[in-house]
Structures are given as C-alpha cells and as structure tokens.
Image (cartoon, rainbow, N blue to C red; front, side):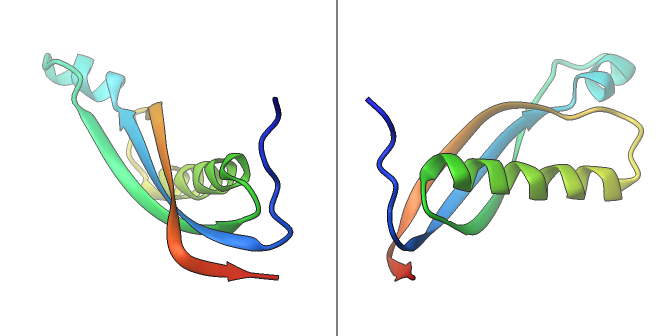
Length: 85
C-alpha cells in the first residue's frame, strides 16, 4: 500500500542520524552517531525526508571538513497543527 499524499503541505521535523567513519578511522576511535534536525514543509513524510537530506548534504558540502558523513537513519515526525495549501 502506498503512502498517503496530502493535498496540503505539512510541517515535518526530520532528525538525520549520521556517522563520520573516515574521522573515526583517522583518530582510531569507534564511529559515533551524530544527528542534525531539520524542519521542512512537504506533502508526505517521504518528501520531507528527501528535503531534509538535501539540506543536510548542502551543509556537509559547506562544512569544509575532509571526511565523509554516512547517513544511518531518518526519524520523521509531523509537527502538529501545521498545514497549508
């Protein structure tokens, strides 16, 4: 069964969980899980996740660090009381 598509945009809070395996290997430490949270407007949770990943990747490119970030999970929840056409 497919995802329900709203006629209205909803607000979602998306938590991106990621690791930095290159940094962990360079420092000799176990990889740690970090997170970043984004609030996005979208019609579906899938679209919200995609939008948050685009924002995450933009920030990753702008960070200037020399190691890759590996997304390990997305946690997507609707923000109650927000919808708009």
